[in-house]
Length: 321
Image (cartoon, rainbow, N blue to C red):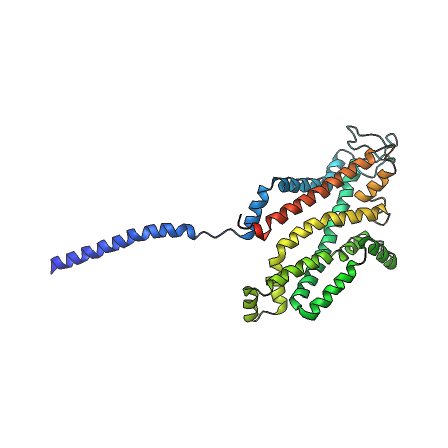
C-alpha cells in the first residue's frame, strides 16, 4: 500500500509540474494580448508627429504666441515699450536698438507688433470660443431632435448664410452702438458659428443611431445626458480641426474691421490697425507695414497648415495606417 501511495503521489506531482510547465507558455503568449490598444488620440498624435510640416507650423504658432505674450515684458527690461515716443527717431529704419524700426511718432515697431499680436490672438481665441459654444450646441441639438425641428433649425442657418459676415457685424455695431472691444470679439464669434453648426450636425446624424446611443437610452439616459456625455465627445476631432482652421478667418475679420476703423482703437493696436497705419506710410517707411504684415501672414499660414495636419491625423480613413 505504501508503494502504491508513493507512486500515486509521484504521478500527482508530475502532473502538477507538467500542468505548471504547460501553463507558462500560455501565460507568456497571453501577456502581449493583455496590453491595452492605443486610443484614437494616441494614434492621431503619432500620425501628427510624422507630419513634419504640421509639427513645424505648430512650433511656429507657439513661438508667435510667446513673442506676443511674453515679448513686451522682456522688451521692458531693455527699456522698450509701445507707447514711449523718441522724437529723434521718427520713422527710422530697422536698427540694432529698434529691430523693426520706429513709426512716424517714434514708437518701437517690434513692441507694437508684439502688443498687436496680443489683441489679434485675443480676438481669435475669444471669437472662436463663442462660435464653438453656439455652433456645437445648435448643431448637436438640431441633429438629435431630427424631423421638422431639425429642418426648421437648418433653414434658419441657411437664411443667416445670406448675410455677409463683415457687413452684418458693422450693422449690429451701429445699431447696438458697440464700443467695447471685448464685445466686438464676442459679436464676431456670435455670427461665425454657422459652419460649426453644420459640421457638428453632420457628425451627430451619423452617430445618433449607433449601438452605444441605443444602450444609453436603454439604461434611462436623458437626451441632455446623451448629447453631453456621448454624442458631443465623439465629435471632438472635427471640432478641434475646424476650430484651428477658423482662427485665421476670425483674425482676418478683426484685422479688416480694424482697417476700417471699427476694431481696436488707439492707443491700443492690433495687427489690423498696424497694417492700416503702415499702408499710409508704405512709400516713405515701408518697414511700418512689412513688420506686422509679415508676422500676421506667418501666423495665418502656420495656423492653416496646422489645421490641415490635425485634419489628416484625425481623419477616420487613416486610422488603420
